[in-house]
Image (cartoon, rainbow, N blue to C red; front, side, top):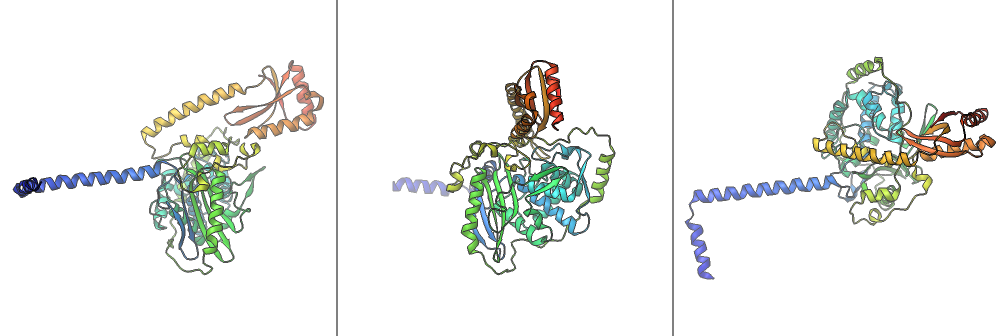
Length: 497
């Protein structure tokens, strides 16, 4: 063995210095490539799945009270809208817009996937209504409309968002759109979202109260909110929920009680109940540890207000308003919610946290169907087939396949639920099946004998559910039933199916 060792030593020493240099250079190059590959792999792995991340920050001191995977990259989903609202508050504070400024919906804004307010292209709401639509219903169309107004375009507003993120110290966040619909480049961390949550409270105390709203009126509709912790957990005053299949169930929460103040963020939850329960536990565990004294910290930067390109955006929106637009997008789009169990199975993050790994509590059937007040955690599986500015070509091909599969499923479901043929009486449409059923029950009670033998059913279509009665023998019977309904104050029409 000693002879072999001496031989190896002599062989190494006999190699020229130039050869040694080349060998070392190749070795170092290989090591560098291997290291770079490992780094990229780690980032991609953390970005691709909804592994749980959480953080709790003492808003009075900036101290981190709890942290788990707080700097791991995640898809933000609707937490993105926190930055959209931040920039809107900034424009309000600077006097560039007012709460009554009209926000015109472009074709792009009106076409955003649910959840949404369902405002048609060329129509408008006020800035106040757009903000309320975002903080309660998590309206993707309202967020896009605000972004286009302030930034001139989706891409222009994304640049504003990224500039502001850097100014606030959100070093690992990248924005691509105003609403959080899926985009492979749009990433964030729990720590960055906590920074943003604190910035919203600290920089805009006069407007932050919007996040405490649980409902608002829009025309003749009452829009209900999704944040189940507001009003049910003492001291919770907002901030934002979020969900897509790729992101999991996200939540940023602000709490103020007896001088103590914390902001918590949970990303990649397994379900709405699991996510909410985890946040309740974090509040209970860490709020008592928070300080009652406000101490200046560098958790967020005090940044000067940016200048949105409101004039350019207003000019572009004026052109849209003057254009002759076929306004067929004014009805509210369906917002169907998957069950808790189905959503849990779709996400299934790996986490040592028992609250996020446990099977969620099954909600009652009435809470699983969508309505004007259902959760944006039900942003439909459809949102994961939406792409925006920076989506790659390979992702676009996948999107087309997903859409084709979904269209086939919808067609089969529609065929299965088509209901009776012949003469039918339609009494209205609803964004949810339960809503259509309620319309039918009300109508049947008012219709009396005319609907005694009629069969109530709901037919799914692209914009919701049609509430209908079938089983009429002929046109005359259907018309008579409709007349009886009209006399009872129920609008309807009869037709051949």
